[in-house]
Length: 163
Image 1: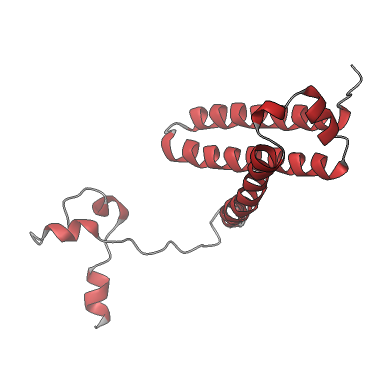
Image 2: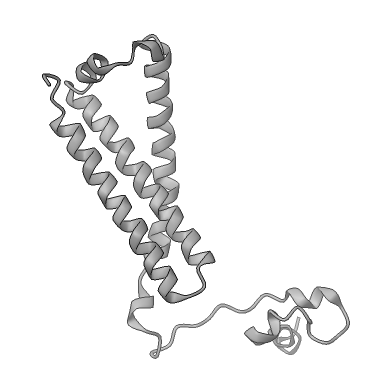
């Protein structure tokens, strides 16, 4: 394929999203894929990071670890330890007396909250149209995440069974 033909398929961004195609009468021309944007010296410094790639990678890795942690938690709590009827204050006190279970529950808390917050950040970026709305929603979500993680961590490590 010559470069003349391939260059003819590349359309400006505004034209590609109109749904009108290239004017050839073929409806399939409305779905032309735009070429990747090239970074230039005028590209702002803040867009030169790999944050989105790291966030994507975190979602995949934390999802795998969460599956293991949660399935292990359910297996131990519901099958091996006698089911929901055995769970009470004394059960939790005995469980959190072990540093192993404190770390297990702490990992579940931290990974679940950060995984969920990262997912919500992506949803907010996709659906909030105004920058100010996006800023407020992500700020509220971040504050709720920090509050929940700090409070949960405090509860796990300062739990006193002698109350």
